[in-house]
Length: 159
Image 1: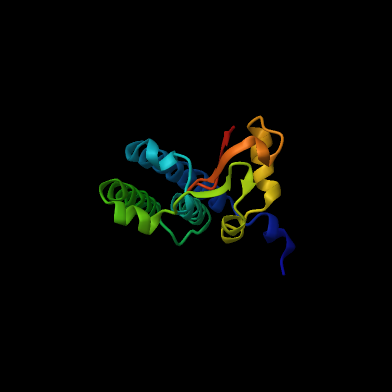
Image 2: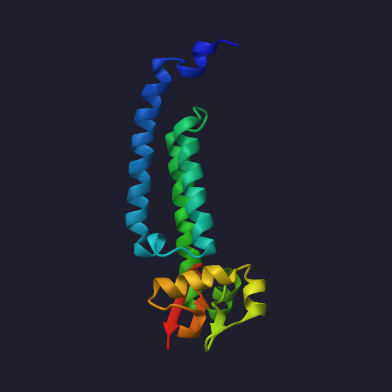
């Protein structure tokens, strides 16, 4: 094993990474601007998957010489286009929206934990209490309702 190649192979690879990386990043920013604010909104589970896929694709374009910039830009555009299509169809069809997005869950109601919902959502009482305290409450009794939103955040309605 050549130890020096672990740290530096050649200037060609570095120059390619800088040029292709800069252009791929510019392409991603352009595609995100074209697709609108929804692509960068608070993430639900589906949006998170798309965001991770975008990052993985950008990384592959940057580091794998076998992937040309045009192929990488096409992959980025495809992912953003599909995400835009899913968001559009979700707005147009309640059934489709239910298929790809999770529904909010009531995890506490009138000062009491909803134990079944906590268990099914894999949420601890401490996590709910933390959200209550972050919203100005001191205990679960201060909460009229705590809702686990489809993006994973906890909404607290104090009494």
